[in-house]
Image 1 (cartoon, rainbow over the protein chains, first blue to last red):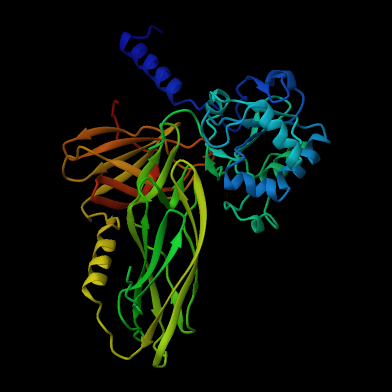
Image 2: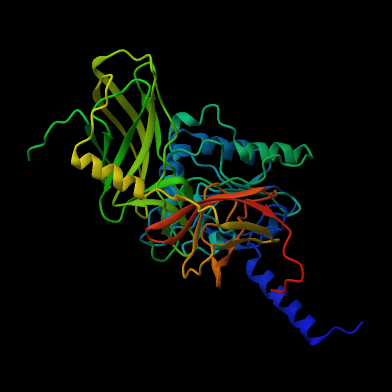
Length: 207
Length: 267
């Protein structure tokens, strides 16, 4: 059947709209690929980790919500527990130079050894390009990618959206839940939540 | 500096500002509702949060300490403002704002010289960075059979607080929400044209907070396209929030979400 010019125009318009409206990263969709330089000086390419679970953790060492999970040891415990089980864990620092949480490689390495952080690597993203690719809003926003390269969790670290250390005890950790359910071959019950915390300190003006 | 002690108000310091607990009446009347206000004054550039804080931040939490026979109702949130950047949007309040809380007094309350009303507050104050704060505010009021009216300053404060609340939508308005694959389209028939409309979603993870809201004006209202949140994975039945038509004119919206659209409509 021959399509009219009007019909084709509508299709083009729809496609264009879909393109604009399409999310950068969404649960159930392929995780956008990226390469990043870490504080250890090495380059990491997401696609190299196909076949493994990958956790992305947005990080800002000055943010009260990030500090809640590091001063309590909660985040370090998760990093150790899951990397020991073969999960790749990238801490991503998308703070722009001059903004809260911005670090150079030396600062980050000193901080990580002092606080006992144990991710696979801490990716330095001062331009915010990885952050924007995933539309990361907060620290600590958490993303879990399955071995097929599909996002299975996007959101908060747990169900207690506060900066109080005492709220960690008894909280439901969504990252643990997503990894455990995925490893058991199940669907993730809670696959997306509001990623609570501080705004990611991207380059640009805040108003 | 001389401060005048008043049984009707107690102020506490929070990071980059103050919060004061103010009672509308100078006494508690058994069987009636007493309104109290949490009056915030923040340094320029800093803000607190609405019930839905938006992309980052956290709303105020209040744990009330009240005489037995009194119970705090739900906090009444003023219409919010948007803060943030092109990619991150927070909803809240800067400058001066008052959150109203109704406190119900049981009819069986016995007269008392000085009943204590207090609250432990957890509040997040942000500019670009955020500082969590805690404060305790308290005041004492007599419990008397007859109400004692507020002074002029208190009256003005509560009048301003009530003006800052979103209004109920007029009965003649028709508001519905079309469910599109990537967006909600808020279709509002108001019986008049408007040149500005901004929607603040009350429930998190439904609407993409930072996405531009494109308005399509009509003689009797408008259509507003709201991009869906990346975190929204399931259909919703209703969309709730606040519709801002101008700086001083906001309305409570609670509209059904459906996929039916007028027949033969071409857009």
